[in-house]
Amino acid sequence: MLAGDIRALRKARGLTLTEIALKLGRSVGWVSQVERGLSVPSLGDLRAFAELFGVPLSLFFSHDVPVETERGIIVRAGSRRSLGTSESGLVEELLSPDLGGSFEMLRSVFAPGAELKIEARRPTEEAGYVASGTFEIEIDGVWHKLGEGDSFRFEGKPFRWRNPGAEPAVVIWVVSPPVY
Image 1 (cartoon, rainbow, N blue to C red):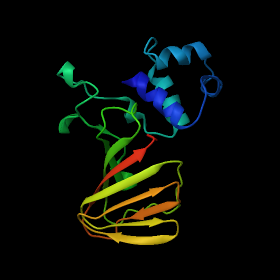
Image 2 (image 1 turned 30 degrees about the vertical axis):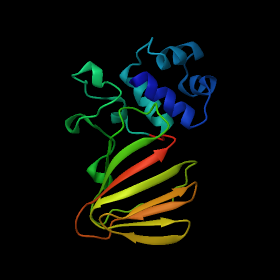
Image 3 (image 1 turned 180 degrees about the horizontal axis):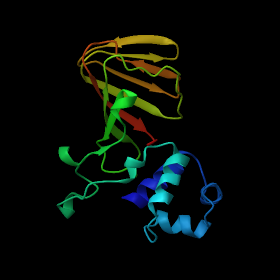
Image 4 (image 1 turned 180 degrees about the vertical axis):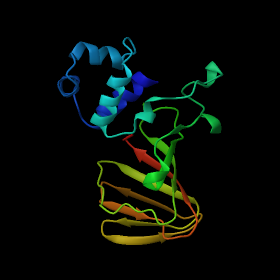
């Protein structure tokens, strides 16, 4: 899973093996071996990958899949990879088995009052479903207030979000291609 996730992150960011190697101070051969699962990066290397890709270090740690036939197919509720901290106001769990497919699916929990103050823009198509709570999203300069059962979709547009409610907002978020 680690090798596939690193490869998917590199490709999603449009980087070559050579560019990654230069940024990490490693050889192209080593990066290639990591992506093919032939070399295992150290914790320091994983920190460098996380910083380079702008993802939390925890993304690279997964729980073992107890049933081999479920590997890469099933994600059990207790085995999701957590991708955030409560200090940021956003905790995300990867619902997809890995980042190797054409999209990623996340369970995002937005704390009351949490907001993304500076707009983000990614070369992705994104969609979300509000499972619970109140959630507001600004897409291309227009704010939309969503409640339980509402959904949204946009592609390559600037966006911000906030939870104006007193309860956490839970949003199932799909991003293509994967960016975590």
